[in-house]
Length: 123
Image (cartoon, rainbow, N blue to C red; front, side, top):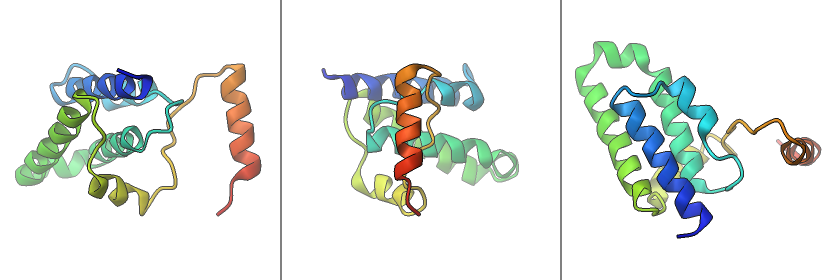
């Protein structure tokens, strides 16, 4: 299993822990690997961001909560195998985001990457 597949398995475990209440979304998001440039990991990141953003809606709409839980379960079960998420899931997030804003560690390599993104960023 390569690095990207191992990273997907790691992310699947983060999502599983969020779903069962072992880990908060706020603590899971900074743990996402920032160096894979994998569209499946980026889509999973966005799915968790939306999960947290919909907290109030989830409290009041049981059907929405169940649907979102089922969706995240599909995401974590797919990544758990090291597989890529289906293209339709990836494309749904790409419509709104150029890339995931996965936090990077504060080290030399990450600072170079941040600088490079800053000077090459185009709207």
